[in-house]
Length: 337
Image (cartoon, rainbow, N blue to C red; front, side, top):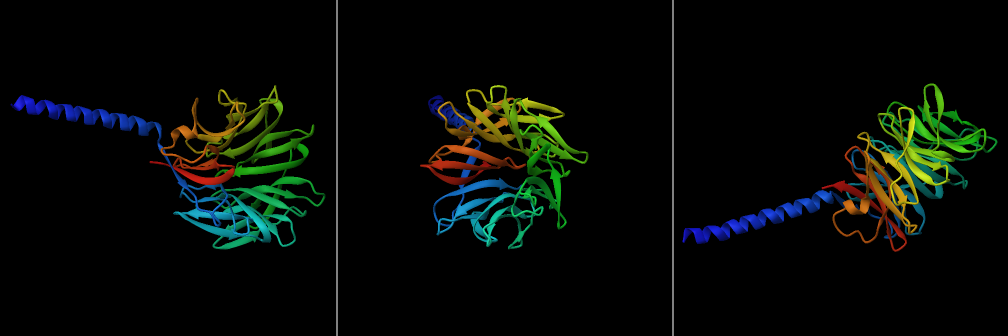
């Protein structure tokens, strides 16, 4: 009699263990959950950056359908306003909650801004009319691009109330996109031949990072170890994601993709970016080491559309991403479960 009772119990335990193992396998392959970020008017927003506190910045539509810089924190959205114009957008922030980006002014020009403690400040230019801010580190150093009096744009550094021209690679134009805690800066700059190349700016000046055999490259992000990521042309003029470290540019283009760009890298070396499929659709991806994974396959739950872009990843492996919902962009915060 006892044996008859034990057998069903053992079968139930074994079934339970089997189901638990299957559940674990499923969830280990889908480690991310997605939080849809709020809008001001119910339609249209994009996430561009996040810090290690989980704060996210980007833009959202207002009731008037204008684009405004915004900050998302703990499920709430804050309109950061403008410098007097109709439009603005936030590109980066640090762990102190200082936000940088661009805004239209009351004079219809585009100006770089620093937002902190509820106030948006015009960062000025290099003597021209317009400027843009793209990156900020924990020391409050800000990088971007600003116009000179002749209209050329140069990469620049805002620091302690002053702006510094970072120059070019011999051409007329340059843009600085990111800065790490060592003050090392990456971006793209025009060469003497007129091509734009990725650069790394250190104490000794601006270093041309070259290309993957083509004519164009741009560096979008840099981590604490001075690993740089971006995109570069190949000899066939295809745009491929790259990782640059220790003086060498490595092609990290995912297989079965037409084009790719690496947009972000965290201090652990995890890379986020966007590839273009053979059907010409954009798909967000992650790279760790030599392994590339499409972001859609890592998310638990239905999204309502494909994740088309991953622009930032922090040191907690949280990701600022965008999904395409019937041709309307929607911002997401992806976090590990």
